[in-house]
Length: 128
Ligand SMILES: [Zn+2]
Image (cartoon, rainbow, N blue to C red):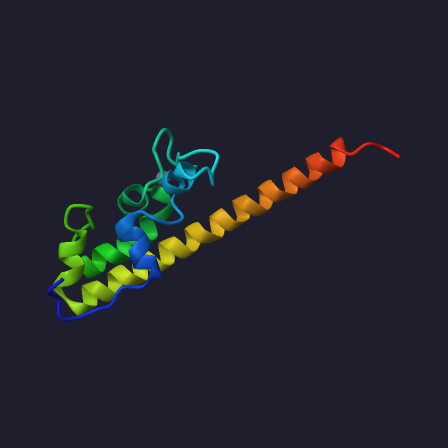
């Protein structure tokens, strides 16, 4: 709260609060069939998982590690990003990249589900 730099955007808010396109969150509101990460077995796809552990985002995490000068961790993320404007900007870029990819995956998942529902409705429609 006492930082002298940086502003928060939509993507960073999602990573910091866990309220967003994470399957754990979507599943809680019945907007996803499962809370589990599609790439990591038996692991709930939370903001923490996506930000610090999920193999799908290791490239983005490596870029953040370069800016932070060490691998990012859940325990030190806010402390690290508040320490300099460079680290703040790196955290914002990381959050934007990751959340944008997750939003695209979520959009594709929903489109696929709509298509399956349409096919099912067509199959169930009485023949004339
Ligand atoms: Zn994962």
